[in-house]
Image 1 (cartoon, rainbow, N blue to C red):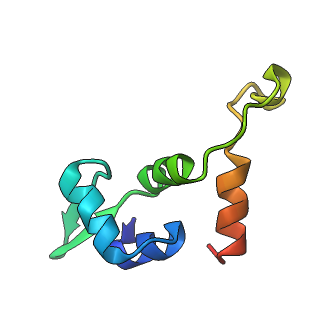
Image 2 (cartoon, rainbow, N blue to C red; image 1 turned 90 degrees about the horizontal axis):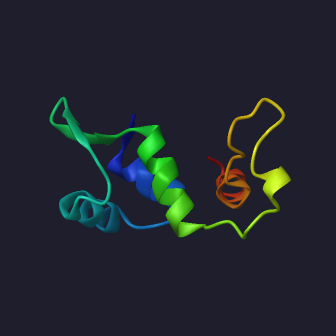
Length: 83
């Protein structure tokens, strides 16, 4: 679970933007200990929106184990931003 500040840092947006996404229902959040926290899976979904991947050939869309390929564009952004 990530705080609003951690989420903002990870996606490269301001905390106010993250709060707006929560208010608009675009980003689910929960209250824990008086703070709003966001699940890592929901942050990854927002990252996929912000950093969309180009269309891949069909054979690249799934891994050797049959699972869906990750969004490499968002993963690269995370690695470059230190997250």
